[in-house]
Image (tube, rainbow, N blue to C red; front, side):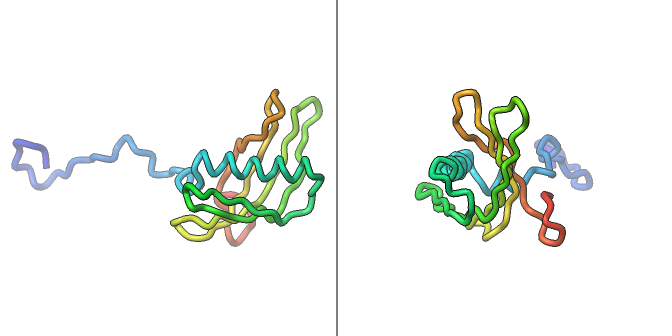
Length: 125
C-alpha cells in the first residue's frame, strides 16, 4: 500500500522494472565461474585434450562442474569458438548447461553464451 494511503485494494507493483525472464545461467554461474570454465577449456585445448570430461572448480564461490562435451565451432576468418556442455554444482543444485566459448583478438578464451540445458530435448532453454 502506498505510504500515506489507505488504499488496501490496489497493491503496489514493486517489481515492474525487473525482468522476470532472467536467464537461470546468469543467476547460477557468476562471471568468475565463467572465467574458470573458459580457462578449463583453454587448458584442454593447449594440452591437446580434445576429449572430455574435464573438471572446473571455483573455491571462492564453491561452484564446480564437469565439462562433458566440446565441439569446435570455428568460423572461417574468426578467432575460434567451441560449443560445450558442462554440469555445475551450485547452491541451487546440479544442472546441465550449454555454452559457447570463443577466443578474442588476444587469443584469450571467454564464455560468450551460457544457458540451462533443457532436460527433455537437449537444447538450451
